[in-house]
Image 1 (cartoon, rainbow, N blue to C red):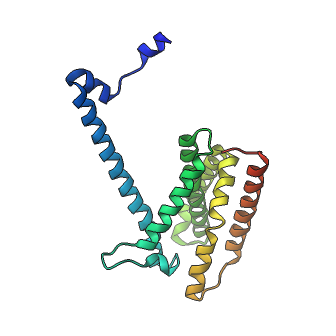
Image 2 (image 1 turned 90 degrees about the horizontal axis):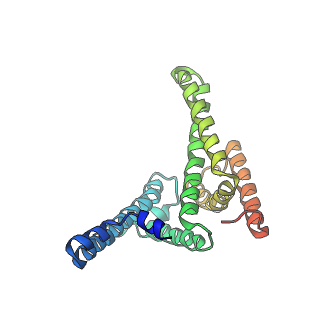
Length: 211
């Protein structure tokens, strides 16, 4: 154990504490807190901006596009904050919260990437100048699908549990616009999402997968 302790590298706060005293450690610690809070604020605003801009483009329900006189998107901020807190609560039940959150967010990001790449294949196959992009779109689709496979079935199923309920926002937006709720392709995606969510819930309940 003593050999392991000798191999540990001191933190910047520890180095300054040894060099200039306790105030050096306090200085670095306060700077770290300020930095983390600044990053947290920035990422909170960015997450809310995604819903806010999507609502302005009519891809989300109108209530998410509302803002105050000071141009604060309160509904979008509230929704993103609530969802973030839910994810944080879920991580409490994970054996390795950091890696679980990292892998889950990767899977959640890869699913839209896969759908976008597959749509690019569809567009390229439709003909015209875009046909020359077909190999790139096909490669992107294959590569993203491989990354999802590498991420593991567990994270894919948990992603479906998150995405399936979000379909209600899609339905609300379509109804507000008086548009058809689902095209045939969208129905296939919906069926896969709901089936994956059901399997994910059952797998978690029976202990087949663990967070």
